[in-house]
Every structure is written in C-alpha cells, then in structure tokens.
Image (tube, rainbow, N blue to C red; front, side, top):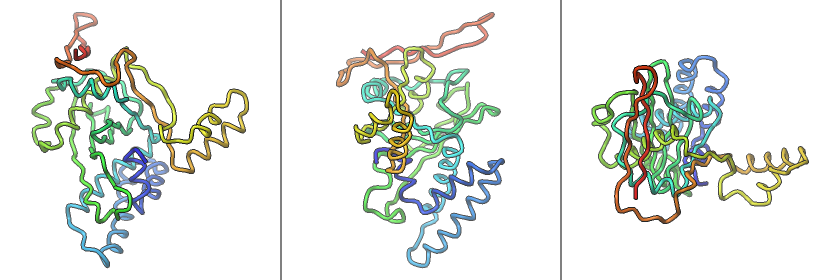
Length: 275
C-alpha cells in the first residue's frame, strides 16, 4: 500500500467507524465528540496490555480527525508525480499562498513521493488550511500501530498572509515536507498543471483495463468493485508535461506574485520553474 491513508485504514481498529461518523453526521463537531469516545474505548482496551504514552494519544486523535474529514469529503488523494515533486523540491517555498485556492476537495490527502504527505482540511470561512503531516514509512508493515511510533506534525496556515511567522513553530525536521506540501498547494493554481484520474500504480493492470472498459458497464462496475475491495484507490495524478523524469537542476525555482483585476486589487502566484 503506497499511501498513508491506506495504511491508516488498514492499521487503526477505529478507522472504519470514524469514517462512518464523519460521513453520516451532519455537524462535524458532533462527529468529533463521538470519534473521541470511540478512540477512548479502544485505547482503554489496549492499555490493559500495552503502556500508551500521552504523545501517542495526542497523535492518534489528530490523525483520526484528519482521517474523518478526509472520509467526509470523498476520500480524495492527489499525487504529485515524480518529475513535478523533484522540480518543486528545487523551488523556494512561496512567501504567501494565493488569494484564491484551487483545491480538489474541502478535505483531501496530498502525497509527495519520497517525503510523505499531508491531510489537508480547508476552512474557507476562516481562509485557513489545517495540515496534518505524516512521513514516508507511516504505519510500516508487520508492526502493531501501538509500537510503530508514528508521528504527525500539525500546522495551520491562513491565506493570504506571510507564511514564515505562521510556521515558525513547525519542527525543523518537518520543514522539507512542509515546503513540498505548500509548493504543491500553490502548484494547484497553475494553468500548466495537468490532472489525470487513475488507479494507483500497484493496482493489477488487468483490473484497471476492465475498469475502463469502453462499452460494458457491468465489466467496469465489477472491476471497480474488485479494486476497491482489494484496497486499491483512485488517485488524481498531478503533473506538468514539460518536466522530464530525472532532470538535474542547477538553479532554484521560485514563485512571483502577479497583480490583476480592477486597480490590481487581486493577485496570483506564477511559478518560475528551476533550470
């Protein structure tokens, strides 16, 4: 399983119930309260066998809330393709996010190859984003979740506004992933970005082909059901066609702000790619 969201669903005993609570409950606050009760019962049961540090409890509650919003809004996964992720790794983090964001869902998971990813929840009424970041190697195979020592890092970003003072409390060892996530969010506003929906790379090619059968609806439905039941997910791949795999960059890319509209009252970001 390539994505942290899949590993979370496979390893946390409450994942299915938390997803149902957030998807079925009208008010997110009510779902949050019920989610805490579900996790409390599971942790009390586990505490009879294992010692559970307070840090683990805090981490699991943060992950559960991020997972709940992810489930509530359609379980959308966006994947920066390898060439784009490499180019963004050589791009300076924007000083501000755009005035207007272009996000695939109100809550989704952004996967950054080689780094990890982040659950992202949008609060448009507050013009804010909540980021729950997880590293590559989250929930490793064959390791009980209580013993995996999975960590998360939380960040809240308001836009527009200077990012540096908002993010000064993010731990240094998370800054690389944070920069990749912010660059990815800014990239979603760029017209040159292409989005292609498909199944994750490890999905059986035969099933994927049948899920895209050009004429038989039953074949498509059956293959789709097989893929989902086997744990494979649909993913939106984000790519820029002009970027080459394995490219080497001698200079950093950066973001510049461009004013537009009446009296130049609005602004947007323009990506200057690394070279």
